[in-house]
Amino acid sequence: MVRTRGLFNIPHQIAVDQGGSNGRTILGRFDGERLTMQELHRFENNYIEMNGVFYWDTPYLYSQLKQGLLAFRQGGFGPLDSFGIDTWGVDYGLLDKNGHLAGVPRSYRLGVQADVDAVTAKIPADTLYARSGIDPSLTFNTLYQLCRRQREGDAALAAAEKLLLTPDLLGYFLTGAAGTEYTIATTTQLYNPTARDWDWATIDELGLPRHIFTEIQPSGTIRGHLRPELCEELGLNPAAFVAVGSHDTASSVAAIPGEGSFAFCSSGTWSLFGVETDRPVLELGAGSGFSNEGTIQGGFRPLKNIIGLWIVQECRRDWQKEGQDLSWDDIVAQARSAAPLRSIIDTDSQEFYAGGGMVKKIQDYCARTGQPVPETVGEIARCAYESLALKYRKALEGLEEMKGEPIRSLNIVGGGIQNKLLNQMAADATGRPVVIGPIEGAAMGNLLTQAVALGDIPDVTGLRRIVRSNVEVDTYTPNHTEEWEAAYRKLEALMK
Image (cartoon, rainbow, N blue to C red):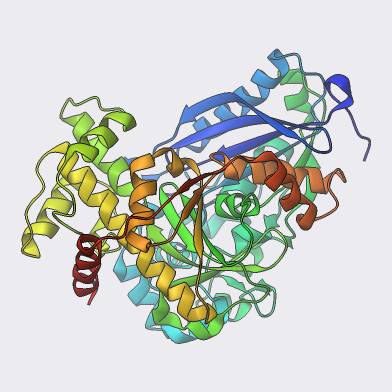
């Protein structure tokens, strides 16, 4: 590949870090030792309900990607070396024979237990777990989404020539090159980590179309270049598209500076809680609640998917509908002032997965379980934050049991680390020091994976060395009290 260089011969990369609630375009400049990051563009993202189905506004997301690239050109930085995209997992778009979208991409928030039941009636949950290593109880998995569409006789699925997961789909629109990156493939429940290929046995037994699944490529593959038409439209050179750790959690975990016996948590709409291993830990079993997702180095992350800040995000939507225009800082401040450990919810209880009416769902749960019903913004938010911190302890103890050794600290990355109240709650609930940072972990992992792909960093070991030399972290010291211990026992009782 012919390398272009930006200002002062320093390579310029762009990371698009697209989350379920917002997206960011971040410029990275790596001089061989130091990585500087500069936000160029930020935008909101929300799913849209139409006729009972939740969708993502993909044309809008694509337009925002172009706005980010345009911001780079307008900044006068010179040529762009590469760009990479990371997003949430499991969701996808379908392309027809002409390479056009076959229908509007759906949001995973549509999943219900009936989708799981329909599949496990044909293939037992234990078999599904042994094949994929993915928690088969998660209603939103790509497998269940596809099988629902198949049962419905969905016209888009019938017309589809390719299935591209969200980051691969957005990359396709920018480059015209199709493929499936490894870490995002592992989120689908359709990847076999033992065979290191699509789970063809499950695909065939459920009658899903084989031809829609594209080649799985390692993280860091240079898949293509910015389309000529876009180069002309945006005034850019044909920069390389790197299939980075396209699952945002994989990119976040790549940027963790931790050493020794630590667990990680990627905190955002979801809290993804786990450790890194060289092989999938399939002996955990279908009932463990743990999934084996991929790392950028080709290994695995046995992790627990915990509903994260999604619950408070949904509450904020409810409050906005009532005319309360609350910032995140407002919500945290009111939660800080509310009485502690008054009511606890199991954040992974089924009713909290779907969008809409979240405030009432929390209140109904507390009433049903004989607890004080939270009424104010502060009481509701504090209930959600404290419950999430207690779920962290539950997941951490499961990881210790799996590893057979104590976990000394918890490293939290992602946008959720801006919530200092939740960070302290996590330390208090788990009784371990909590190390925070970097805040833009997914973008940092995205950018440094591009640097590996372009030959500016030798490997993932070198990548982690760069992270440790670039990141300043905060540490929260635990204050684990009898009140937290009692709350944890209450959570355990609620989960039975």
